[in-house]
Length: 424
Image (cartoon, rainbow, N blue to C red; front, side, top):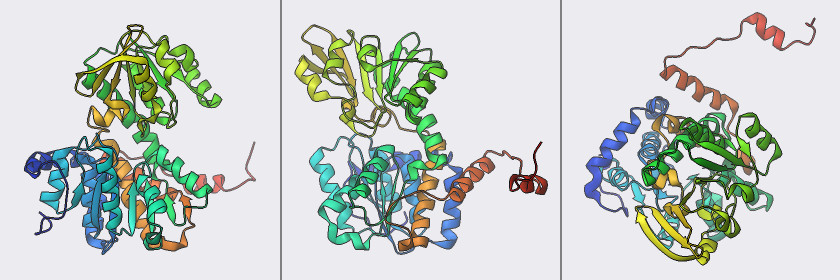
């Protein structure tokens, strides 16, 4: 254990620590980039003396990020960004084995979540890591007196970046925020390969249903949607994509998927997955058109993508038929099965992204905090992008860990690329 004194915490059971320790070690074995950063942080301690509040999914991969920040000199406090994504044994191990304060319990209610938000702000952080921008939103709305002490924040999700941009537009974001989600080594890999695999993993674990031969409707064809569609097709599904963006829609067509409005797809799908980051993309009128026995889930950050209030009004009966699976029987007799209460299916019903993917995402987080500390208030208030050089560094470290070498430009090539005089 790093600290002799047990830190303040609120976890399910500290006796789960041994299992959590094993899970953290297992994940860490597939996170070589973060390991290299941790080794450097141990020597340089770039976060020395700084308090960091982390609002994230409390998983074995996040634990490896937290210990990296701690090794870099930071004092960390972690809370859950989603009530169903916490791995209770990992939370216990972070407290007992590493001396890190954690306030997260799988299944915590909304009041508990809000109380944990307040605790994270009571910690008086100089740096914030956010997943959905809830912590920053509460800071701005309820703790404006603390804003001047915050060096900056980083954001992990598309949904969170969207919220930050709205704050910036309204003139409320008066400190720098790094859109970690927009780094290429994050969204090209985490959103596509991570979300793709873990979403299908969550659906299969929750239902034990065969995907092959079924029609899977993917709502949204951003990087997360691309990943879900790719993996569903790989399992033998007939995939339909719905979109509002014409460029993404034609891309889905060219990728070989059927594209249609949700009004039409609602009557064809067997499994529905929302990954839009928007509100009520599956609404009451869509539930009414669905076939008997369909499975509906969400892999976007917030559960608002499914209008579950409308669904419950349509239903004459509701019951839990499997863990994290609710059956809604409509007045016409059709049954609709909702997974994980409409929350993130990949983290609620499975274990989230594989460690090798989160290795790059959390490398971005660690280096983004270091960048904030170095640049401080010289960065403009509002949403900033992590420098491309940092993105390239993470990609190079990942290639190195895989034992892969790539070419580099020769002097002749470099000269040609910077000149306009050479041609046909």
